[in-house]
Image (cartoon, rainbow, N blue to C red):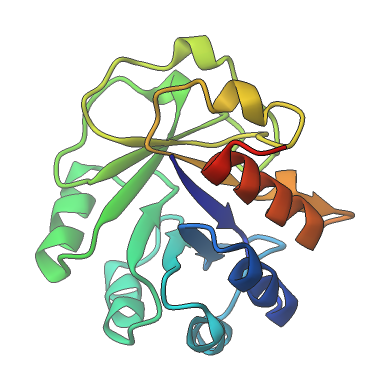
Length: 195
């Protein structure tokens, strides 16, 4: 199972993930307390271990803004976390062949998107650090990430879900900042099943 640590916004965060070596990390370009500028993300990407793929998180961003960040080599995947519809996704896919993750709350999952590579299922109030009822996950063929309130107390249950990867942000933080020990512990549990 893959693991993504999202919401990195300090140089220390990059050092923490370089040590722990998750599969993916996330830079949030949307309004958020973890938001980074394009310039910050560019610097962080240069510091990042090349084995770790960087995901850019966007909410209803102008397509050209995303394409610009892609063309600068700052991200390796695009995550759409807003109300982006099929037309938007198709236009984005025409301008870049980068893999796309479409985040969606379980309550809103009614139609399947074309031109995306992964789903990310989150609680209806995304970014709240709250869990949703995992028994409601739909049976789909497309690989998906599981997000929303995953932390050290429920990681073992999350690992029983047949998902492509899990996505954590607040679950590896202490007082609103990424915690090196929590990141290392989570990655160890996911990658090696070790407590």
